[in-house]
Length: 273
Image (cartoon, rainbow, N blue to C red):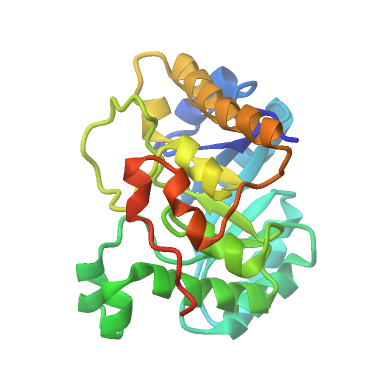
Protein backbone atom coordinates (compact mmCIF):
# COMPACT_ATOMS: atom_id res chain seq x y z
CA UNK A 1 0.00 0.00 0.00
CA UNK A 2 1.23 3.50 -0.81
CA UNK A 3 1.74 6.02 1.96
CA UNK A 4 -0.94 8.70 1.93
CA UNK A 5 1.52 11.35 0.75
CA UNK A 6 2.39 9.25 -2.31
CA UNK A 7 -1.06 9.93 -3.76
CA UNK A 8 -0.35 13.67 -3.83
CA UNK A 9 0.91 15.22 -7.08
CA UNK A 10 2.01 18.79 -6.45
CA UNK A 11 2.15 20.96 -9.59
CA UNK A 12 5.04 23.40 -9.69
CA UNK A 13 2.95 26.09 -11.36
CA UNK A 14 5.40 28.90 -10.71
CA UNK A 15 7.24 31.13 -13.19
CA UNK A 16 10.83 30.68 -12.03
CA UNK A 17 13.19 27.81 -11.18
CA UNK A 18 14.04 29.54 -7.90
CA UNK A 19 10.40 29.44 -6.77
CA UNK A 20 10.14 25.80 -7.88
CA UNK A 21 13.25 24.79 -5.97
CA UNK A 22 11.96 26.47 -2.83
CA UNK A 23 8.69 24.52 -3.02
CA UNK A 24 10.47 21.24 -3.75
CA UNK A 25 12.77 21.76 -0.78
CA UNK A 26 9.77 22.51 1.45
CA UNK A 27 7.51 19.66 0.31
CA UNK A 28 9.92 16.92 -0.79
CA UNK A 29 9.06 14.65 2.14
CA UNK A 30 5.33 15.32 2.09
CA UNK A 31 4.21 14.72 -1.50
CA UNK A 32 4.76 11.79 -3.81
CA UNK A 33 5.15 13.48 -7.19
CA UNK A 34 6.14 16.92 -8.45
CA UNK A 35 4.47 17.97 -11.68
CA UNK A 36 6.38 20.17 -14.12
CA UNK A 37 4.15 21.90 -16.65
CA UNK A 38 4.62 23.98 -19.76
CA UNK A 39 5.41 27.31 -18.12
CA UNK A 40 8.18 26.01 -15.90
CA UNK A 41 9.62 23.58 -18.45
CA UNK A 42 9.88 26.29 -21.10
CA UNK A 43 11.68 28.51 -18.62
CA UNK A 44 13.89 25.92 -16.93
CA UNK A 45 14.10 22.89 -19.21
CA UNK A 46 15.51 19.44 -18.43
CA UNK A 47 18.01 20.82 -15.92
CA UNK A 48 15.27 21.48 -13.36
CA UNK A 49 13.76 18.03 -13.91
CA UNK A 50 17.11 16.45 -13.10
CA UNK A 51 17.50 18.66 -10.02
CA UNK A 52 14.10 17.57 -8.68
CA UNK A 53 15.00 13.93 -9.22
CA UNK A 54 18.11 14.41 -7.10
CA UNK A 55 16.35 16.41 -4.38
CA UNK A 56 14.56 13.48 -2.76
CA UNK A 57 12.41 10.42 -3.33
CA UNK A 58 9.48 12.20 -5.01
CA UNK A 59 8.88 11.30 -8.65
CA UNK A 60 8.56 13.72 -11.56
CA UNK A 61 5.50 14.11 -13.76
CA UNK A 62 6.27 16.00 -16.98
CA UNK A 63 2.95 17.49 -18.01
CA UNK A 64 3.51 18.83 -21.53
CA UNK A 65 0.24 17.53 -23.01
CA UNK A 66 1.81 16.66 -26.34
CA UNK A 67 -0.49 17.06 -29.34
CA UNK A 68 0.94 16.90 -32.86
CA UNK A 69 1.31 14.53 -35.79
CA UNK A 70 2.21 10.99 -34.63
CA UNK A 71 5.87 11.02 -35.70
CA UNK A 72 6.55 14.32 -33.93
CA UNK A 73 4.88 13.05 -30.77
CA UNK A 74 6.86 9.82 -30.92
CA UNK A 75 10.18 11.64 -31.24
CA UNK A 76 9.27 14.04 -28.45
CA UNK A 77 8.34 11.16 -26.17
CA UNK A 78 11.70 9.51 -26.79
CA UNK A 79 13.31 12.66 -25.41
CA UNK A 80 10.91 12.72 -22.47
CA UNK A 81 11.73 9.09 -21.66
CA UNK A 82 15.43 9.91 -21.68
CA UNK A 83 14.79 12.27 -18.76
CA UNK A 84 13.66 9.38 -16.58
CA UNK A 85 10.37 10.92 -15.49
CA UNK A 86 7.56 8.82 -14.04
CA UNK A 87 4.55 10.26 -15.90
CA UNK A 88 4.18 12.19 -19.16
CA UNK A 89 1.01 13.41 -20.83
CA UNK A 90 -0.36 13.47 -24.35
CA UNK A 91 -3.77 14.78 -25.41
CA UNK A 92 -6.17 12.06 -26.47
CA UNK A 93 -7.10 14.43 -29.27
CA UNK A 94 -8.65 13.09 -32.45
CA UNK A 95 -6.31 10.23 -33.34
CA UNK A 96 -5.47 6.94 -31.66
CA UNK A 97 -2.39 6.85 -33.90
CA UNK A 98 -0.94 9.81 -31.98
CA UNK A 99 -1.41 8.01 -28.67
CA UNK A 100 0.13 4.83 -30.06
CA UNK A 101 3.10 6.84 -31.29
CA UNK A 102 3.55 8.32 -27.81
CA UNK A 103 3.51 4.86 -26.23
CA UNK A 104 5.99 3.60 -28.81
CA UNK A 105 8.30 6.55 -28.19
CA UNK A 106 8.11 6.00 -24.42
CA UNK A 107 9.40 2.47 -24.92
CA UNK A 108 8.20 1.36 -21.50
CA UNK A 109 10.44 3.87 -19.76
CA UNK A 110 7.75 6.38 -18.81
CA UNK A 111 4.06 6.00 -18.00
CA UNK A 112 2.07 7.73 -20.74
CA UNK A 113 -1.17 9.34 -19.62
CA UNK A 114 -3.88 10.39 -22.02
CA UNK A 115 -5.48 13.74 -21.24
CA UNK A 116 -9.24 13.27 -21.66
CA UNK A 117 -11.21 16.46 -21.00
CA UNK A 118 -9.58 19.29 -19.05
CA UNK A 119 -11.25 19.90 -15.68
CA UNK A 120 -11.69 23.57 -16.59
CA UNK A 121 -13.94 22.64 -19.53
CA UNK A 122 -17.70 23.02 -19.14
CA UNK A 123 -20.51 21.41 -21.17
CA UNK A 124 -21.16 24.76 -22.84
CA UNK A 125 -17.57 24.93 -24.08
CA UNK A 126 -17.77 21.36 -25.41
CA UNK A 127 -20.86 22.31 -27.40
CA UNK A 128 -19.18 25.45 -28.72
CA UNK A 129 -16.20 23.35 -29.85
CA UNK A 130 -18.51 21.42 -32.19
CA UNK A 131 -18.81 18.12 -30.34
CA UNK A 132 -21.96 16.04 -30.73
CA UNK A 133 -24.80 17.13 -28.49
CA UNK A 134 -24.68 13.90 -26.46
CA UNK A 135 -21.14 14.72 -25.34
CA UNK A 136 -22.02 18.29 -24.42
CA UNK A 137 -24.92 17.04 -22.33
CA UNK A 138 -22.83 14.35 -20.60
CA UNK A 139 -19.11 15.07 -20.34
CA UNK A 140 -18.56 11.66 -18.78
CA UNK A 141 -19.43 10.05 -22.11
CA UNK A 142 -16.76 12.11 -23.84
CA UNK A 143 -14.21 11.26 -21.14
CA UNK A 144 -15.03 7.56 -21.44
CA UNK A 145 -14.67 7.64 -25.22
CA UNK A 146 -11.24 9.25 -24.94
CA UNK A 147 -10.21 6.93 -22.11
CA UNK A 148 -11.10 3.92 -24.25
CA UNK A 149 -8.95 5.34 -27.03
CA UNK A 150 -6.05 5.74 -24.60
CA UNK A 151 -6.46 2.22 -23.23
CA UNK A 152 -6.55 0.69 -26.71
CA UNK A 153 -3.41 2.65 -27.65
CA UNK A 154 -1.50 1.18 -24.71
CA UNK A 155 -1.41 4.19 -22.38
CA UNK A 156 -0.83 3.52 -18.69
CA UNK A 157 -3.84 5.59 -17.73
CA UNK A 158 -5.60 8.90 -18.14
CA UNK A 159 -6.00 12.29 -16.57
CA UNK A 160 -9.65 12.80 -15.66
CA UNK A 161 -11.75 14.59 -13.08
CA UNK A 162 -12.91 12.86 -9.93
CA UNK A 163 -16.41 12.76 -11.33
CA UNK A 164 -15.30 10.24 -13.98
CA UNK A 165 -12.90 8.05 -12.00
CA UNK A 166 -15.37 5.41 -10.89
CA UNK A 167 -16.70 4.86 -14.39
CA UNK A 168 -13.15 4.51 -15.77
CA UNK A 169 -12.18 1.99 -13.11
CA UNK A 170 -15.35 0.00 -13.68
CA UNK A 171 -14.80 -0.07 -17.44
CA UNK A 172 -11.03 -0.54 -17.68
CA UNK A 173 -9.93 -2.09 -14.39
CA UNK A 174 -7.89 -1.07 -11.37
CA UNK A 175 -4.54 -1.29 -13.18
CA UNK A 176 -5.49 1.51 -15.61
CA UNK A 177 -4.29 4.58 -13.75
CA UNK A 178 -6.53 7.56 -13.02
CA UNK A 179 -4.72 10.80 -12.26
CA UNK A 180 -7.19 13.35 -10.97
CA UNK A 181 -6.87 17.15 -10.96
CA UNK A 182 -9.53 19.56 -9.76
CA UNK A 183 -9.11 18.47 -6.12
CA UNK A 184 -10.29 20.77 -3.36
CA UNK A 185 -9.85 19.73 0.31
CA UNK A 186 -12.91 19.21 2.44
CA UNK A 187 -12.00 22.20 4.61
CA UNK A 188 -12.26 24.62 1.69
CA UNK A 189 -10.17 27.75 1.91
CA UNK A 190 -9.65 28.18 -1.83
CA UNK A 191 -11.01 31.17 -3.72
CA UNK A 192 -13.19 30.64 -6.77
CA UNK A 193 -11.07 29.55 -9.73
CA UNK A 194 -11.23 28.03 -13.20
CA UNK A 195 -11.92 24.44 -12.22
CA UNK A 196 -15.41 23.24 -13.17
CA UNK A 197 -15.47 19.56 -12.14
CA UNK A 198 -14.02 19.30 -8.63
CA UNK A 199 -14.11 16.76 -5.79
CA UNK A 200 -12.45 16.41 -2.39
CA UNK A 201 -9.40 14.16 -1.83
CA UNK A 202 -11.49 11.65 0.11
CA UNK A 203 -14.13 11.47 -2.61
CA UNK A 204 -11.50 10.92 -5.30
CA UNK A 205 -9.73 8.15 -3.37
CA UNK A 206 -13.01 6.39 -2.58
CA UNK A 207 -13.83 6.37 -6.28
CA UNK A 208 -10.48 4.74 -7.09
CA UNK A 209 -8.19 7.63 -8.09
CA UNK A 210 -4.52 6.62 -8.05
CA UNK A 211 -2.99 10.11 -7.89
CA UNK A 212 -4.46 13.48 -6.94
CA UNK A 213 -3.15 16.70 -8.50
CA UNK A 214 -3.42 19.32 -5.75
CA UNK A 215 -1.87 22.71 -6.38
CA UNK A 216 -3.56 25.89 -5.20
CA UNK A 217 -4.95 24.49 -1.92
CA UNK A 218 -1.35 23.73 -0.90
CA UNK A 219 0.65 26.42 -2.68
CA UNK A 220 -1.65 29.31 -1.71
CA UNK A 221 -2.12 28.22 1.90
CA UNK A 222 -0.64 30.32 4.71
CA UNK A 223 1.37 27.21 5.64
CA UNK A 224 1.86 25.00 2.54
CA UNK A 225 3.54 22.23 4.51
CA UNK A 226 0.66 22.03 6.98
CA UNK A 227 -1.80 22.08 4.08
CA UNK A 228 -0.04 19.15 2.38
CA UNK A 229 -0.07 17.19 5.61
CA UNK A 230 -3.77 17.93 6.11
CA UNK A 231 -4.51 16.53 2.65
CA UNK A 232 -2.45 13.43 3.45
CA UNK A 233 -4.42 13.00 6.69
CA UNK A 234 -7.70 13.16 4.75
CA UNK A 235 -6.39 10.52 2.34
CA UNK A 236 -5.15 8.36 5.21
CA UNK A 237 -8.62 8.31 6.71
CA UNK A 238 -9.97 6.73 3.53
CA UNK A 239 -7.07 4.26 3.37
CA UNK A 240 -7.70 3.22 6.96
CA UNK A 241 -11.36 2.51 6.19
CA UNK A 242 -10.35 0.64 3.05
CA UNK A 243 -7.95 -1.51 5.09
CA UNK A 244 -10.69 -2.33 7.60
CA UNK A 245 -12.92 -3.33 4.70
CA UNK A 246 -10.22 -5.73 3.53
CA UNK A 247 -10.27 -4.52 -0.07
CA UNK A 248 -7.79 -2.71 -2.29
CA UNK A 249 -10.68 -0.91 -3.94
CA UNK A 250 -14.15 -0.16 -2.71
CA UNK A 251 -17.12 -1.03 -4.90
CA UNK A 252 -16.76 0.97 -8.10
CA UNK A 253 -19.96 -0.16 -9.72
CA UNK A 254 -22.66 2.38 -10.53
CA UNK A 255 -24.80 0.92 -7.76
CA UNK A 256 -22.23 2.03 -5.17
CA UNK A 257 -22.83 5.73 -5.68
CA UNK A 258 -25.04 6.02 -2.65
CA UNK A 259 -22.11 5.17 -0.36
CA UNK A 260 -20.54 8.60 -0.75
CA UNK A 261 -21.71 11.85 0.78
CA UNK A 262 -24.31 14.18 -0.66
CA UNK A 263 -21.95 15.92 -3.03
CA UNK A 264 -21.08 12.55 -4.51
CA UNK A 265 -24.63 11.86 -5.65
CA UNK A 266 -24.19 14.08 -8.67
CA UNK A 267 -21.70 11.65 -10.24
CA UNK A 268 -23.28 9.61 -13.05
CA UNK A 269 -21.23 6.49 -13.72
CA UNK A 270 -23.50 4.41 -15.96
CA UNK A 271 -21.56 5.67 -18.95
CA UNK A 272 -21.46 2.59 -21.14
CA UNK A 273 -25.15 2.29 -21.66
